[in-house]
Length: 166
Image 1: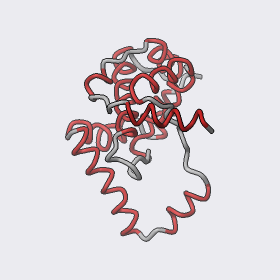
Image 2: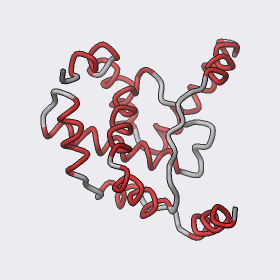
Image 3: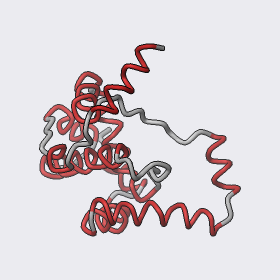
């Protein structure tokens, strides 16, 4: 228990990093891993990796609590995150270097999915709208358009499966 308490103290002391600083991070192993998993170009893999890093920064941003949900529009971001986590040493070091803690990937549980299904359409839309507005305000219009307009077209579930190397 003391280790967790100490980790929280370190995290609290660590200033939240600037997005541009975090986006300077590069990891060729993860880029190569994306290319090994998906039939994409080097440039596309590098772009996707940067978007995944951006998502991790967003997840740690103090204003985004309860607005960190990867929905169908962002499946490719989840794919990048899964790939990054496979390089556990690099992922661990990245998380601690920039955020002072490990960023856990927590898929939606069956209970959470049932709770979301039980929400009224209005409540569901309000929850999604809050995240959309935060992404727009914190990460900018270009990121919002990329994640919610371009990526759903390019990287739908079916398209990701078609890109997956056999």
